[in-house]
Amino acid sequence: MTPSTLISAFAEDVRHYLQLSPRQLPSMYLYDALGSALFDAICELPWYAITRGEMRLLERHRSEIFAHLHGLTRLVELGPGDGRKLKTLVEGTSEPLIGHLIDVSAGALERAAHTLSDALNLRVVTHQAPFEDGLDAIMRVEDDAIVHEESADRTLVLFLGSNIGNFDQRGSAALLTRIAASLGPGDAFLIGADLVKPERDLLLAYDDPLGVSAAFNLNVLLRINRELGGTFDLRAFRHHAEWNAACSRMDMFLVSTRDQRVRVKAVDLEFELRDGEAIWTESSYKYTPDALITQLEHSGFESMAQWIDRDAGFALTLARTT
Ligand code: AVJ
Image (cartoon, rainbow, N blue to C red; front, side):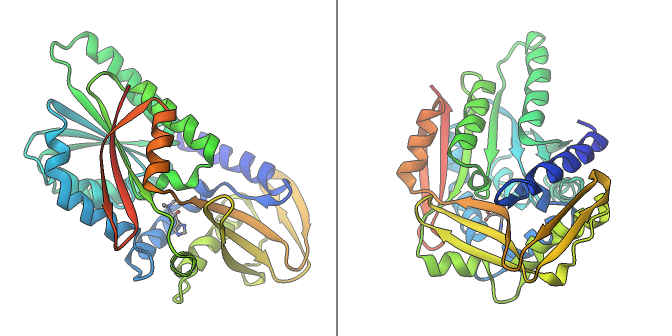
């Protein structure tokens, strides 16, 4: 997928999702260059424990992870963030590896590739695409390559940082099933998932006192203004995060603080927002360790090992296809 196809997909989605009821914006559009940088800043906040918890688990268990995966030659990471998690992982082996990074954000890919440039045993290939498209492209090439190769070299797909949290039940089942289908015998999948925890901890993680989460959320309106000729007045929206216990997820919204009219010129869209009306911008589903394993089992995987960081309330699960 070329960057220009991605831009028109953005335009299409903005027009479609802003007219739904309730109004929405798909969370993947939070990650332009500034959005990705703001997310990296969120990871440094004392209230957002996901990244630190996962880094501890990767550091502590990477040798064990590699011990499960003899003949591993290829890593495929969906949404590598700043690249530090993958770097921490590959420092656990001296075997030469190829790392395919898939992300919709060119900026994030650049930063990740830069971080990984001093991991000497890793050769990095980047793919600017939605996860499914990138995975399909890599695995298609792999299928062709395998015909010419003697040894079956193995792939580990990484889906870290609780990126799975952005997918609802159906969406995550669809994505996990697709990942499982792309894997061959001996390949594996490593998934990091944030766990259900006390509501006050979740509220601090998604509505932090420094306002970084608010900036991260509001940035999607700035992006629409810049890329699609939007007229959003950023000062007339406030960030709101809430715990949806019934669905086991955190929801993020941008709430209009007055009656207002908004245009998005590039897609010829014009609409009214009432005072207090919300645009739903993200859901982050929270798992229990068992619910995650069940979800994997329903999607064609079996769990090989699971590690939990109690301090962060975070689980890393290694699985293979059944
Ligand atoms: C990158 C999707 C895992 O859901 O915790 C952080 C994004 N949103 N703060 C998450 C996010 C608000 C993050 N993920």
